[in-house]
Length: 243
Length: 120
Image 1 (tube, chains in turn brown, red):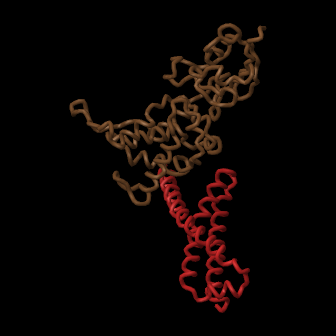
Image 2 (tube, chains in turn purple, cyan; image 1 turned 180 degrees about the vertical axis):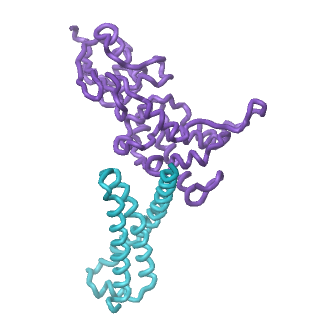
Image 3 (cartoon, rainbow over the protein chains, first blue to last red; image 1 turned 90 degrees about the vertical axis):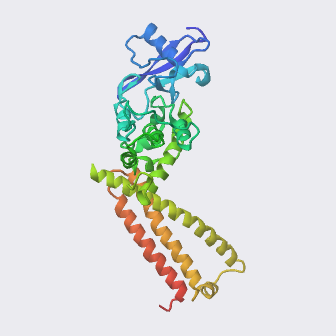
């Protein structure tokens, strides 16, 4: 062991398990994903974790590092290391399959539950829809569109923790971008799906999702937009009709 | 499924009602506090209070609006808090209903009391 080794505690097991400590050499510009990869390749090949692109696009490598959910491929050890210690655990609020890999099915099913998918009414024979880039709708959609589906916001959300049927920040953010997509034809279904305590109105506006989002998206703002739009649609109606 | 959808829309309506009643409460609480600071400058007696409030329609109207805003706002909030804190207890709705009824009855009784000076 050299003085510069990192002491890395990694969660091993499923729901039941324990932290196991590994010693990993420090390198300049080392990311947390590099650390996990080193352990799996050099120290213990049975370690399970998930990654794909390594450049912050795919959203598969999120883990809880020193108590905070982060994308590990773009998180430098030097930014977050406490002394020489790192603690790496799977994401919160999701069932653990093994070690650092969580079962993301519920997370993505909730996107479907929030009608978080596009449906238009044009065919290939129709002309392109013309959407002005500086229109208000397009600007609002742009603000939330870069989501990579990593689950960091979902793991950081206190409401998801206390209300397991709550759709969560990522699904609601996606619903909001589609609400502002003028080509989409499922607006009433979507507003019904995200109304109430399993949807946007359960949000406490605490902002943990916004603070944790690696893409600097503000799901809190998207959810606030949905709250107003949907509540108004329920009481007074909307441009697509009444709920 | 249909019932769950209706429930969501109902909750959205309640959220809207709570928002609007919060706006009313914001004004009422500010006016209420200002009135308290004004009223207690030279001490506070029951005669003084009743002297101002007895037969004063504007006063009674203001405080009845205050009571109605509380009646809408507080039970919705309490229901949400209890539902989140004790999700399986089933106490949220009954407690919220009792609280709402108490606020409405006790609040309105108080408004009638200070308006009539206890003669009713």
